[in-house]
Structures are given as structure tokens and as C-alpha cells.
Image 1 (cartoon, rainbow, N blue to C red):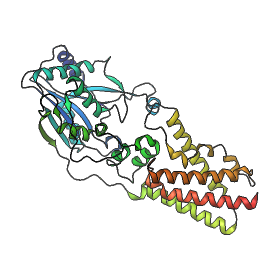
Image 2 (cartoon, rainbow, N blue to C red; image 1 turned 45 degrees about the vertical axis):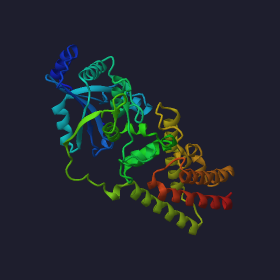
Image 3 (tube, rainbow, N blue to C red; image 1 turned 30 degrees about the vertical axis):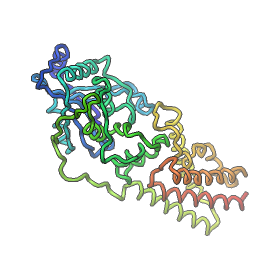
Image 4 (cartoon, rainbow, N blue to C red; image 1 turned 135 degrees about the vertical axis):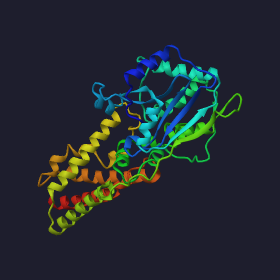
Length: 389
């Protein structure tokens, strides 16, 4: 999903002229361009755009633009209040940038009448006006891919029948995301950490079109409802990526890092057990990190407009109240209620396991080593404090 397209002053003038006098001839073509995944996290899910090819212009319209100069850009992004934009660029420039990124490019020429082409082109021109081009982005329900589908349905008065592709299988939003990410990557871990159980519900096939690859597949099999003619009259591959993606370095992967941390926590816990002591620096680190992560989860859940961050049960292992009880961790003799609090944390980990097992929410598999270490540490602290208090 392309971050930003720089439209030159010359292009702006040409598009302005075209907007005033859009010309569609019988040999004009309107296509859907589908870009394959790239190497960075924001490129992992591909991109979609419309191509308008006439005797006078060859332009690509895409809904995947955002402006870094937006006031309070990062705050709005975190709050789910960042507007994305419809932008336009020359086809050759658009394609060249993705070829340079070594990303597969496919084109589907739509089987439209001249009137339908004119209507779609005019719709995009109007939608690209400064007062119309902004929209509130939602990763699952309103993005560069769903906009391609929605524009087609609007222009064609919902005269489209989608047929489920042969490759279709029942999957949740999270599973569809994971299909495009390496499981042992920081990007995959971050998504599993930030997004809640609302994305673990089974989707309708129609909802798969939040991903460009599924817009491509569903349109490839779609027909006009009134005539049963195919919506796509020609499909071609403009560019095929060469080679394979670079694999991530295992020694800096989350599973490796969390495994190392787990070994350290368990080793210190065993040494503490032998000496009947408690390493307060370790417990302080554990409580402050899990507490702060928990606070972040709560803020994403209740303090933003993101729909996908709700009902996030990662809070069962990253409990926000850990920050408030931190003072008890550094005391030689904490309050008696702190033992009950530690038991409560063990119960939360058990609840997390239950949620994971029955499918209420799928958590990042790279967490398993560190969760085992947390459980053993909590159990040791309960036994240690029983003797001390």
C-alpha cells in the first residue's frame, strides 16, 4: 500500500485540464492494477489502483497516499484519525517505482461499455478534487483495496456478482494477515500484540477484499449480474518479481530474543531458589515492562478510534496494574495482599492459555518462551513471599 506519490506541477496542470474535459473513446481502457507484496511491513500486503488509458492520458489513481506534513501526523496515526488521500500519477512513473522495488504487477482490463468507462473516470476525477480526496483510513474496512471495489460497485450500481475463488478457505482477519508475514518477525509480533480478538472472528468471503490480492481474485471471477458477462475481459502480468525475498536474521528475531530473555529469567529464578533470595532488579524490570505494555494496550483499546485494537486480551500477560504495584516489588517485605496479586497474575496467564486454546484470540507464538518464564517467576515469588511475610 503505497505511502506517498509525488505529483509534479506539470502533471497537476495536465490532470486539471483533463478534469475539465475528460475524454473517453471506444478504445479507451480502464484497468485495475494489483501490486504484489514488498519487503517492508507497510508493503507486505500489496497495493491496488485504477489505470485510465485514453488517447490523451495514461493515469493511475490510487487511494493509498498519506501526507507526512499533516499536523500532528503521528498522534493522528496512533489515534486512528489519520486521513488517507486519493492521488494520481503517470502510469509509467507509477509502474517504474514498483519495478525498482521488484514487486509483481498485474493488470485486469475491465469489460466496460463506453458509458460505464466515462462514468468511472468522471467519478475518479471528482473524487480526486481537494475537497473530496481525503478519507478516514481503516485497515480492514476502508483502504486502498476496498476503495477499488467500492468505486466499481458505486459506478456500476452494484451490478456485480462475485464468485468465490477456488483458492478460498475460511480464515479470520488475523490469519489473512499472517499469510503475508513471516511468523518470526517483529512486524508480525507487533500486529499480534496491538490488534485484539475482534480480528479473530471468521470473515465472510466478501470481507477478504481488504487485501489487494483478493480484490484481484474476486474481480477475476466476477460477472455482471444482469448479463452474466465477465467483469474482467483481459488479465496480464506487467512485471514478475525476480529472486526471493531476503530472509530475516534469526539472531535478531523476536523468538530468539524472547528465548534468550526466558533463559535468563529462569536461570536467575533457579539461582534465587538455591540461595533463597530474590533478585529485585529482575522483578522490577518484569513488572515495569509488562505494566507499560499493558497501559499501551488499554490506550489502543479505549483511547483510539481503531476498531481492530478492541477486546485485546494480551492484557492477560501484560497487565497494566503492574505499574502501580511496582513499589511492592522493591520492598523487602511487601504487603500481604501482594501474594494474592501474584496469584491473580498466574490466573490471568491460565486464562490467556484458555483464550488461545479455544480461539477467542490468537496470540503471537513467539511469546511462548517468555510466558513460560513469567509463570515460573510468579510461582517462585509466591512461595518466597509466603516464607518472608
